[in-house]
Image (cartoon, rainbow, N blue to C red; front, side):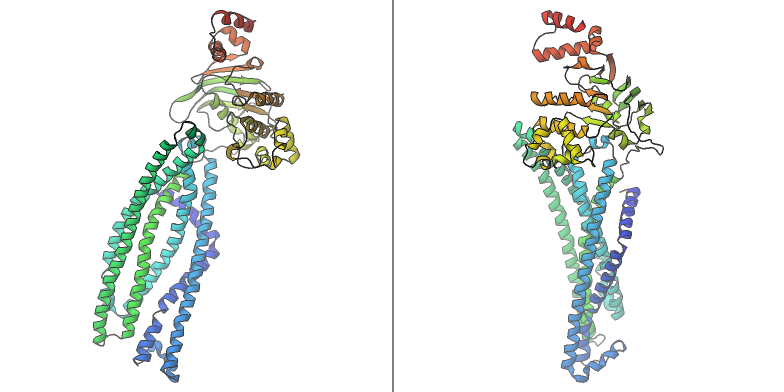
Length: 615
């Protein structure tokens, strides 16, 4: 991960921790309380063994407790042993609050991360989404953020507590007996080198695993969104085999990662056993020589066991941190993608547009150097109805996308009402443009919400009026819940014509100044097509309308037709003018007629209709 990526993430984490500083402070206090109780836990045993059972003389540090023997050793043992329960109770309470507060901070960080990611994703250009895979983006925003929370917050904060515990125990062990401490610490270099080696291996394996999990998510999203196509072509088994292949690779990598994690844990256990063996052996010899008390050895052994516990936890944390590093990088890849600057400081509000659209020598490519539009120039006067025609890939949809400012023109300028569209506030410009596309996109929500998506503050009266104008009110009323009926994802529970009429109502409710239509009747039944045509004709009265035409029906009713081929504007004019020229439009028109009726444009069919059209 680059320094800039690390800096971006540190900024997000610092901001989050500052907002939750009270929770952080309480979690730190709980952590210190837990540390203190863990350090105190073995000392009651030393007091019982050395000063009560073996009658060792009280050292100055414990002289204040000598009075507990006044009522006999039995009472003293009972009192000191109750201290074990008290310390355990406090340790449980501190541990509870530490775990709760750390987890709370983690979930709040996930919330913050997802908000940041979602907000950032919405600011990215469509060219980013044309390269990215939806399933993998979903995987990053959901599971990667969750991994980041589980590991980075809980593990990092817990690792801080573990390290503080180890250092404190180091200090106490050195205070108890320097020579015995050196014996106990002799195994630590081996431990650290072993864990560092395994950690590097785990990080590489975890990176591969997370990448493959992202591919699985992308594959799953792709297949589920195209399940009708898969079933129509009988490719279920083929998709199953592809999914199994990718899942198998992920499984193998996951098992490899877990195997190395288990090896790290077992390494700690083995080295701990060697350290405890050497400590007990050397310590027992010191006790026999009278250079240590049995209580000191008990405390020493208890601390040594307790010290290896956080070391073992650090080994587990190292594996989880390697996964967090991968998740952090994958999330950073999104956050580091620069959003396009859409609004200048002097941007003006687009409102009540007249609808004059001018393309002045506009060229465009999608970043791959292949020009999609080449030196395009045309003028649409206010209120004109204009059709864009041309073969697939000629640039028709790109012109609509540029008007909506989904992309920036590479060369030239586009103006609406004599103002460069780059100087309009993007959101207000789009509010002035009504869009109805061929692929009717709806949300898995109520019909009311789908129509009001074009105007969030719309009243129920406005929603119903828009539905009436789109000839959708009658079929909506026939649904079980009327306008409150929840439709399936992408409107799957409705017919194509019903979906398209809802999309039209969504455009109508905006009261747009300009209409962009992508042949909204090309994929619907005859009855719905007639209703949509009637609604569109009513809606476009007095409005500048730009239609991406896939068929040649009704083109004689348009004020202007723009003919595109390979990104160039090759012809423009009215239907009759273009037929008289017998150029590109003439050829496409009669090819379309031939495809529709299955006849040749030559011979008798050619002679009659052409002359009639030209007249």
